[in-house]
Amino acid sequence: MKAKLKICGITEEDTLQQMAAERLVPDQIGFVFAPSRRRIEPEQWGALASHIPAGAKAAGVFVNPSLEEIDAVFREQPLAIVQLHGMESAAFCKAVKDKFHCRITKAVGLSMEGKDDIAELAPYSEIIDMLLLDTAIPGQSGGTGRTFDWERIAPYRSWCHEHGVELFVAGGIHAGNAVELLAGHKPDGIDLSSGVETDGRKDLNKIRTLIERMNAYEHRDSL
Image 1 (cartoon, rainbow, N blue to C red):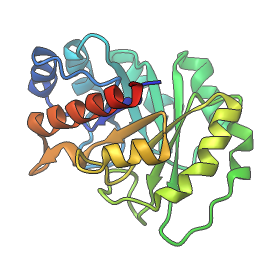
Image 2 (cartoon, helix red, strand yellow):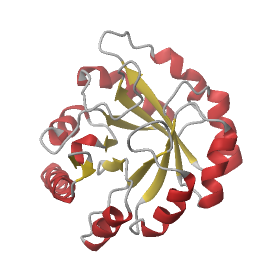
Image 3 (cartoon, rainbow, N blue to C red):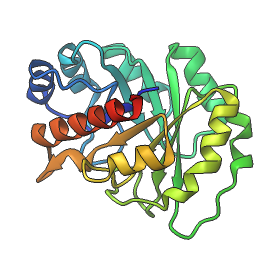
Image 4 (cartoon, one colour):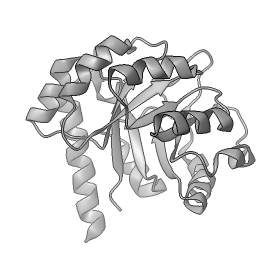
């Protein structure tokens, strides 16, 4: 199965317009509604939504939100996916899914020294649609630009396949290492933000190179 691509942290309409014009269409486009230099307000999302390229699903990224905060975004335009990047409980994930009828991505931060406890995922197994592994940096929620040890992916991949959950990986991924990750560790998808930026802005050349390399890898892998 072809690996999926999420480009996260879009803030400008012209980026979306250029992606559509050049047919650089990822599977998901992420919009950040949590404290971050890439944060947008619900009103901005309302304007950006009309420029999403056909074929891409909109994912909203939240960190420990209230239902009211998510509702403010949905009142502007609905999201296909809500990504919960904080300490949200399984019960909260279910409440979001039931109220907004969207797919749910739950992010798990892997610290450099931490121990992985797959058992902690058990309450989420019948609720979430996607699990995102990201590098955990104290005081930061995503967008770290740093990788974790990819050898830690395997048990999470096994858990995801057992429970019918898609596994995405983030953290320090770019065109230069994406194929290594896909070939060696077989996640269902990858999630990039800083890896396709130059000077803090999305770089169409980097997005193009990434997509070209992913497509070339998928072609080789299918032969």
